[in-house]
Image (cartoon, rainbow, N blue to C red; front, side, top):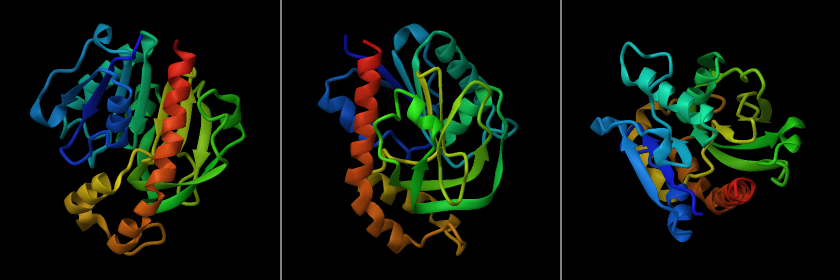
Length: 234
């Protein structure tokens, strides 16, 4: 049976990008909750995979974004029902918070194309066991998270030690963007370019645009991960 994919989108300029391409190529049913359009959150029976996308807000800003509590409840229900849950950037932080871990401002903003290195723990997971030890990924975050209790710490970078974790081989948090495409990178740059200020782990717009040469590589890694998820859930 083909997995039914539902994604949560927080802002217009951060959709699932290559994940949508993958779903279309495999004829997987796709539905969505566009939170910025006040669409309702799904019930667990309506999907097999829940994809939680990124956005410029922070998990701890419930006073500004009251829907955060409802979203975390949706994620919790999906996890408890044994669904596949994948979080990207803010989505990874949402999962971490839902699992009881702390999410907080990091000492560095990480914006641009930087290498990600897998940890030894990653090799014990079904999701990361065949992924290259080091690969390039797109980043755009100022917050980070602690690794939740019971989760495997799977990836790190020079700018941020906690880049990814896997929980119960069904919940995958990716603070980086291996779903990025040239179109999605351009969209984030257009919407959030004001955040680009010189810093150790912040690239300028030209370097980020040129870095899109890495999209095929990062999308290939994502394809392998998604193919693995399909195999382990059959």
